[in-house]
Length: 460
View 1 (tube, helix red, strand yellow):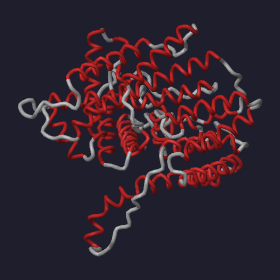
View 2 (tube, one colour):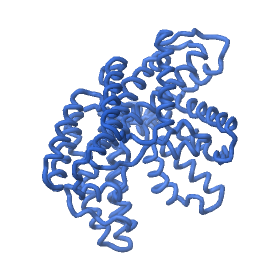
View 3 (cartoon, helix red, strand yellow):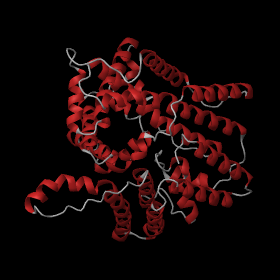
View 4 (cartoon, one colour):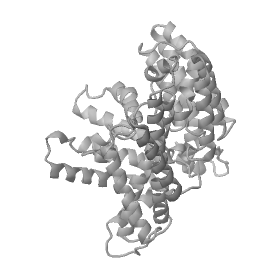
């Protein structure tokens, strides 16, 4: 069930109306859990069993970790992590690992039939796996008591707004809210709906329109540098509007019910360096890797050389988290190198012109790195990047006509203006809110690209 579908709009209205009709939190939790199961089953029903199995394991692991001491305590945590990571590796990386060692296997056993799985990846597996792991780790660290109510814990993992593409939540934020009865609040409803509408606009009007040009460039060879640069820049804004648009819809739909989720994006393309970019882009993932990988590796406590190694390992694994392809490994490695090698300038002391120049340069670096993220393989990515700097050959053709290109550029300018000045989605006056709804709905209806295009991060 895609957010940008009529099915979801009906689902959201029915669930939300029922939610506010229920008299107590227990019945609301049951409603949201059943609704979340239905939401997830709308993709591939049988994969609900996989998610349910890990939920049961982690629920009991939380109690066993809390009641144990010493080695048994660590053993229960290890069991929980192995269960979660094992499922992730099996479904997401098994074929990739076989591909990596396939040449050796074929040389040693030329008649052996390599047992590829060739199965569909459970949607959102990486997201809810990391969210489940954060629970048992926090219990192990003594920062979160084990959740006694199984239904509440299951909802923590399966809460439908952020189930398949985040944000990756922490138990300290969500579990207390799931125990608290939220009375109907019109201001929160307005704020949530306004944010949802902005997320829909970013997805169907901006991201899916830019995708037409991006798809054209990645499906054609021999394009000029100008065509490739336009496509590369469009992809930077496509993936931002696609992913942050999903997050807006997730945060907005939760806000309507009085539940606050973590902010996942903080104007990342206004960053003056790569380090700052990663404090603004996919915040829930970058903070997850910081807290559960970078700091346990030693962080910056063991000298500068070790800090750089820890940073690089963190970004390399972050790249692998995104997908079972060498393109994601290279993408993560590039960001790791940029963070470790380039200085993290203190933007607050920079002059305006200097800061603008650094923001533009940083955006171009991020844009070039995105080429690996979008490309089908590493060879294609290097060829594409080479074309970016070949200004003497190639055909200047686009997937959009001249007017559509100008309109797309105007949408990007509007996006930057809107998000730069946006402080809150709370609209105080009802008349202003009604006008905002009208403008967003009309904009989506007349300028949206429909076809229920899947969100990019659903594949992770």
